[in-house]
Image (cartoon, rainbow, N blue to C red; front, side, top):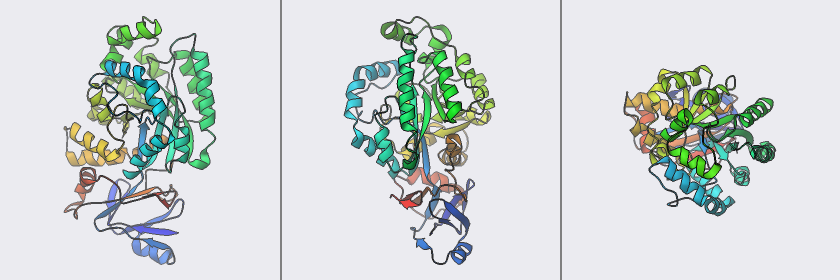
Length: 406
């Protein structure tokens, strides 16, 4: 048994003073410090620095490890030039990202307090890194393929990867399913994948309405995507509509990524169906996709997480870098309210999205804990979330399943 106490503890979305946490692999008790010390007098007591805050381990719901070799290879500024550069350099980048490089990316997340992440994997080559990483991983096996002649082979490959990733629960890896996008997966295969998800009760992720070009293609089979699909796939029209794609997920809550170009009607439908959104502000900026209006997510009571995406469209996998970007991007509304909402998006909300007992300092939940230290004592408690985002580069201490990793 271990006991940890900080100046402030993040409990139920609030910063509470005078509390401590007793834990083994799971959290055993959350209570005032005197009560815990009296009950577990022989437990190991963990010291924290002055002005410290104890958080649940942070959660990055959407990251691509397979492109971690990218620095200046890919083209930024607009979605289609970036996509062409991905296709041109895909083999080189993937082959350059070995297990050690992927583990380095996992370690970067670890230093920013990430104890759980969702790995979107299109080839399965990053599975070994996820097995070796100390974090808890939802391994989202990605499914792609719009050509009816090749979808069966692609689905069989996906199925093999899904089954391979299902065998590592002891290494904190669980299998999820990622649908690439509405423009890149045939509706028949999507239906099969969702039936598989229901059978295995797997978490599902899907890219949706990331760029203006995607919206134009799905609505009218015109725009920048037209040349792209004719060139690579001999395809002259979209294989589905926006509404048909979203409706395919009815009754199965799904984590949709980006949604920058979703309109009010679509956001409302996502909310009604219990879906959620992964918001990746730096990726959206670098690929010229626009700003996700999170005020509309809030208005529609649509849950969202903040996530880094991968190094194919970002400069770091630091969750604090991402939170700072989100804080500066969304200028509407009170900055303190936004800061608290952003902290919630990578803890409580993200844990609920992934369906795991994580993201909260709560009895019975996993003992995944992060300690950060503020530069000075807050003059008012409503500043703590804001100061956390503005001033934290790396966490001071980090525990996963009760074991210290930072």
